[in-house]
Amino acid sequence: MASSPRQRVISLDLSPLSLAEAAEQVVAWAQAGESRTVCAASVHMVMEAHDDPDFAAVVNAADLVTPDGMPVVWALRLLGQPDQTRVCGPDLTLEVCRLASERSLLVGFYGAQEIVLQTLTARLQQQFPGLAIAYACSPPFRPLDEAEQAATLQEIRASGARILFVGLGCPRQEHWMAQHRGLLPAVMLGVGAAFDFHAGAARRAPRWMQRSGLEWAFRFAMEPRRLWKRYLKHNPRYLVLLAAQVLARR
Image (cartoon, rainbow, N blue to C red; front, top):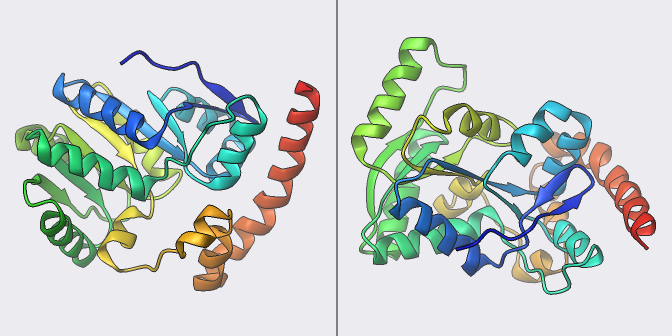
């Protein structure tokens, strides 16, 4: 599949693909045994990249950068991609797992707490009976030392996993994938809270809130102490910067 030209939104270059197209691209790379990285860009990620040029470079070097939230989808539509749809981490996880189960591709999971990981893998195998999970690891929150890093790489390689879902949260998972690109024969997907959502450890917003761009409000209501600073810092600036970009384009 030929890669589509990217569209910049503030500081990130996004891939204007549909969910089906993105999943097919991931599977094609996996079947070829390629080492690739995929990021799902929310407003949080866009603004982290705006504030940190080094992080922007990490994300822009990924092979796919999908629009994770509706505010990012709307930005793409305003900037010349009128048919753009949402390609968020949780939905991409399910679609890639579905294709992997049909095409006999081994998958792996890296991140989350052990109990979340156990529930996640059990539920996915129930939903997709042909899904072959070759690797699952709940790493410590602290940085790994050199010996631990080497052991982790060896375990992932030995598992044969060709698709690796990474759920460490932004920006940690994006840095982790960038550090291991070229070292693992797998497509790495940074899917954020998808592990918690699909394991039932966290509630996902109702569909109408997702479609209306209000998923952030639902998540804030669920975790106000953790998220209030993020939304207060990022959301207003995102709107201002995007408005300036749209006006400059017109």
